Length: 151
Ligand SMILES: [Zn+2]
Ligand SMILES: [Zn+2]
Ligand SMILES: [Zn+2]
Image 1: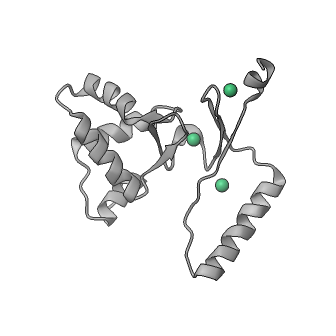
Image 2: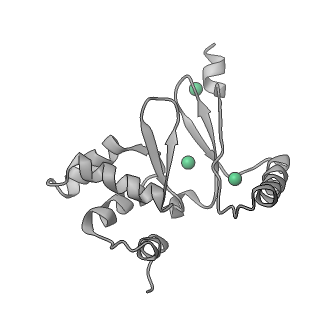
């Protein structure tokens, strides 16, 4: 089967691309934000008023399990989601999370030591646990420059 990577992923795991699934992927594709289930629901209802919040939760759980989305807890009390590969966000990125204003910075401009460390770590972990690593997520928590200035 040919299709976008998420459709391929669903197919690999034996799931069909239903309308709600396609709609949720569409919403996540068109944002650079990290949306909560409730925020996705608000957008989804505009497209299909009959969709329920339960469907959103269930679909996001499925997507998380098969790696179509990544689920984050940034410490603001609600899970947030983003597509594993989002053309808007170009490539793999890490997160800087401000614990004060809850701003989430996606960065792809890695410091040199970071790439080297991730590479070495993945290789060593693979060896040690005989585990094939496909991807990883990195979040750093702290205080952003804006909040530092405001003291
Ligand atoms: Zn990384
Ligand atoms: Zn901040
Ligand atoms: Zn992100």
